[in-house]
Length: 116
Image: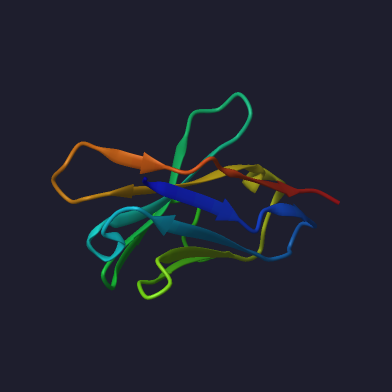
């Protein structure tokens, strides 16, 4: 059974940091692209970051502030977020996809709220 379980969300003050985790199971984690997306209330889902092997790419919202990483031994992907702004408030989702295939896996999301 495929599972992606996000954790690490919460309430943080502007300028603060937060690290999200996504634990994967039920599929060949190391061979999949792992992504983070986010969705704020009333807005469309937004790409945040992706990683496959050692290649990383970031959405405009993340450049210079967020870092994606993975640990294949732990079958986990992480998103280290810093210099957080209220505009970063959203539900953050973990996503996995084997390159070239349409099927994607999604987690249930973790809420990040940036507020003073």
